[in-house]
Length: 413
Ligand SMILES: *Cc1c(COP(=O)(O)O)cnc(C)c1O
Image (cartoon, rainbow, N blue to C red; front, side, top):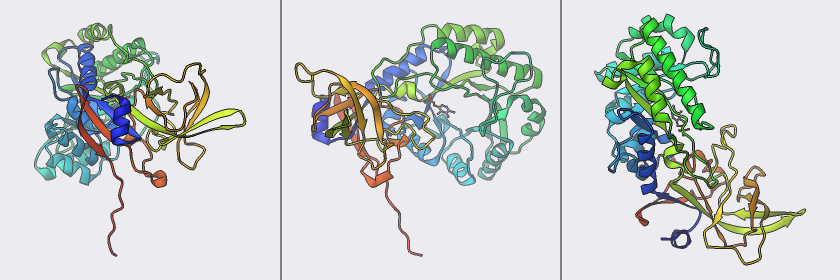
């Protein structure tokens, strides 16, 4: 079905996910990594079970799941991942969450602090098992001089690399928790392949040093990610033609046992795997001029494509949509258009200066590369509009239609 037909059939705002593209992204990324490496899909980017399932199925190497909540655990299970395929990460894991994860068969956790490790160990003990724990390491950025004490920024994430050696003996003795390796995630959305490579080289060297000098156990080394994607603007998935060779070289140098699986190497990705599979279709409700500027008011704003708008504008949306209904009228010229959403706040703007032929009320616009940090990264309940519908496509045909619905649970006192 064409975007116009989908909008007509299911209404807007509408997220359309092409599952074949998600699988292709997975296959391309795994081909850019060492052949024996595992790839975790960070469900945070898009926990839609159909999308998460597409990254597990198909002919390519299946992803595992990186999850950080009971909601993401449920989404991963709904997508067919087993508990044993999951890596549970994130600060502030509660006893109840840990119990639920363990009951679902999750056995691998990333520990962010001594307290976090003790809570994981305690929950595992209650459950009668031992949890495999990666220590999340907060190292120094790649640009820092090497050979001196590493000094990353203060963070709620991970153990400071420079303090880890001293803590290792105590961390190794936590009942219920077996130290299985290290987890790094120093970088997101890397600007280019060289940045990515130098960050990974630095991480590999840090992990090797922690193992060789300080005895950090290293069965599994999760090197994190940083694989990039455009957000709401046209553009290809970045390709990483030189990455695999560079990684193999760095691993051969610093951790030569990796080819025998000692350590097993893993990576993580969210946006790069799913951004391009998603298109957000929106309708223009109103077009007006104000003091010389064109405003197109859409039926979806930051409540549907919020770019984590509630999170200090980590990912401010600045979309450039295309037209879902073909070419604009002949002779029309592009000019800067402000694309506003329907919310009663001046902050509800998806683009301030999109270079567009001003659309007309009723036009359907297509926001490209909208598959990551969409619905669930948006303040959905703000101003109470329904969440966008989400459809998944395979071979161009619709295979599922769903909509998240925030609802209030009442109880009587
Ligand atoms: C957010 C996050 C990811 C995914 O980040 P992307 O930039 O979407 O690839 C992976 N790992 C961890 C630990 C994260 O917090």
